Image (cartoon, rainbow, N blue to C red; front, side, top):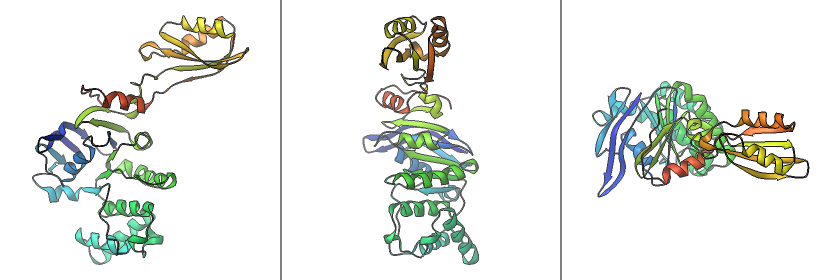
Length: 317
């Protein structure tokens, strides 16, 4: 369990993190989402024990990070956005060096290095110096160093930043594989990352926690949530009028069509479901519906809405 209570960080007169509180348990991938400069990385660094808070507390599995940072850090693996890597060392040599710093030696050190090289798909580059690695392999090496001691908690800051789509998928697959057995905090400004990986998301803007929900629940706050696209065989003008009379329809938009087939978009009032009313309307007029799909909402709409409003909005996960 990670418990963050009333966390504040100030740099001079600037407040980078302003009274952030949340809890997260095992089996959760928690996305820490926000614009650049929102306070995401600062929050992660305070949880990791690398940056002291101005106020507030962080506890990891019951250990106060400020009071006993060494014990707390044994519980955590931290992958910064720009992990310091020793370019002149081989991948295996670098990981072996870090394993020794973690207190492992001899056969146990070698066992852990071999295991993590396999887990992170680094075995074929184990003898290459780090300066010869592609960005994808460098990010995997960064992840490997965070996993050497098999921590209960993983703190990942922009883990797929700068990777191509194939490299991103490799890292995401690794995170998904580990998710059931760990607490994973993933700091990102990439909405696609949140939808692909996270069971819960925090949105931080201007240092303040503005939302805390499952991504699917956040999308329900989108203006397009439950908008209904209907493809049917019907006269255009008559269909526009008939669907516009359905209760809870705010407006009907013509998308495409010809003399026979129409594609209409029904926008709901207060995000109400329109499917039943649309089916009943089509049946009453004996119009053949060829396709109907409801919009699940868009996280980018919600992100813009939340990060451009002044009020703090918190939702339970």
